[in-house]
Length: 186
Ligand code: PRP
Image 1 (spheres, rainbow, N blue to C red):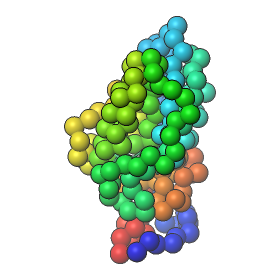
Image 2 (cartoon, rainbow, N blue to C red):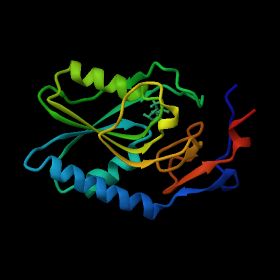
Image 3 (cartoon, rainbow, N blue to C red):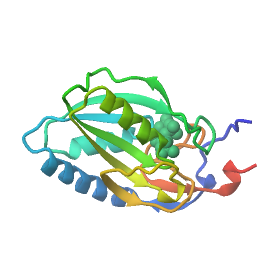
């Protein structure tokens, strides 16, 4: 059954990544993208909702002119395990045909979302497909897939903040924290 929770600071076990650590890596990722896409105008796609904070910081840190678009894709609902079948809740407004697409994710976990996005955008004729993720959790991978650029490889902890949620809460924390086990376990 879906739990209703208050996003209390007492529910957080500890800070996992500080705002400073995150913003330092955002700058490095932006510089990597700038060197890769020099002279081009890629289409940066935010995979909502989780990537929204990282996406906004990342594209603002880039010097390369980018166009932006959004896709809402969800596979977790209120569960902590992937359904394995990500659903498109809101599609892109722009055509990706012939475009250099930068796909921006908050986390690659099981890998199902990334696999689905890759198949979808390749099928729509994207010229190139570059994946940047803030977090990579390889311990949970179910699909053999990897981002092209990953800011942090993390352990198998339940984390929230900076876009990541538990039951739609905690997304607006400017840092990433570990959620106490008792909050999400029965
Ligand atoms: C989260 C996250 C990624 C995806 C990664 O999205 O934002 O898009 O899961 O998990 P995977 O590698 O196991 O597919 P979620 O479906 O929870 O929706 P949200 O972004 O709205 O939180």
